[in-house]
Image (cartoon, rainbow, N blue to C red; front, side):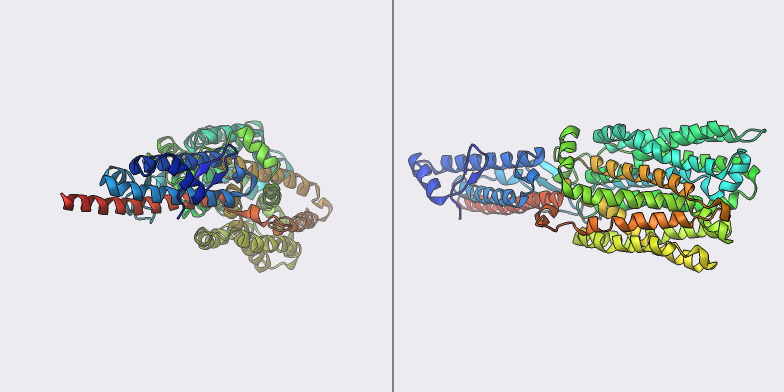
Length: 567
């Protein structure tokens, strides 16, 4: 067992029995064992705090990708603390130190994540976290429904607004571009906390939807400019909730439930798009129905948005050690991400696949109608794309949460997504709806499984960079590329051939195939050590402290009992 510890000026830990014994002998250990034990505990505690501070600020080796070495040093310090605590408890027969330490975990809320107390800080998850998560989910559903309000009935909307299908597509495109415009503000607001972001989104959704209805509710037909303004406000609302799930789960959940929580809130966004594609065609059978349809959507949006103002801002006590880790400043986070190859290997394919998904969701109606399919069939295809994806993600997310198999999930999902876009090129030409249905279902399953995995994996690889930085940047890239892909696909439409979109499908397939090697190369070329799950490891290190402190408490109880028995 290690007898002593020394913290050098360079921050490195030097554990040596000989040096410790020499030092303790020179200070007269034999004369006052209690004093020497207190000195050893103070020194080891200083070493622990120094290393934890380096982890929080990213100034130590953890930020440079050698967290394993630092973790070993922390464990060595903990071993010294345990021995010092045990030695100190025997001669003094005091229970004060043990009573201040952790009690064995109890079930906090039936979810398996019990409270634990470390160094006076109590870690616990609360049932109220589900209220905020449900609200975040509802806002993501409705804001995505707002995005595709007009796309499923673009032909009727074009007649109602006295314009063309291409102009109606700009309602979707402007919505996506609004995301990138407000990205810096989103990162700043999320840095303050998820509630600020959620409330901001709810306010914009309320205002944007009723402005859209004001533009549609006109005896002389719709006022397209007013509707566009309301749509842009809805587009500004989206990033505040779409980028929030990883930040919310980081604060309210432990590492045993973060992927599932992020998946639920994030995948609610495309689920809202599925609802829009499935329901709106049944509400609009002729151009004059457009105004009534927008009214229905506005009412639903209002019902979903109002509860956002009443959600709790943060838990009374931290949910886990990593949730209270001081996150890096935005400037420091940016400097780290710019030099982080793994960030690019995940960010680029994620942004491209989200962009392709947004494009195909917006244009699916225009892809299928020229080949004789109805608006209802196109709506069902879009719903399959998302519903099958949600069901698949509901199965895969808990498994990934349990086994932390992020990389395996990415390596399976990415090739499937690329091949699905390739196969879909020829599906409309089959004249059978079974082909598009099947490909959309497979594409949805792979895409929805990938999204929460990449969002959480980015947080793990870049910890202690704050989650909202990576998630907002990733989603912003996807929204911008989605808008660009919609414009490009519209330009590739073959108007001479009844508006056939085959060239656009070829473009999507090529782009999807080109980026496949990027995520598959993660961990290669001697960079496997950079795939360490840093946030999980941070919680595990603190868990070791909890276990050690529990043993110390038991030792203290035994020593106290012996002392009282002697009296």
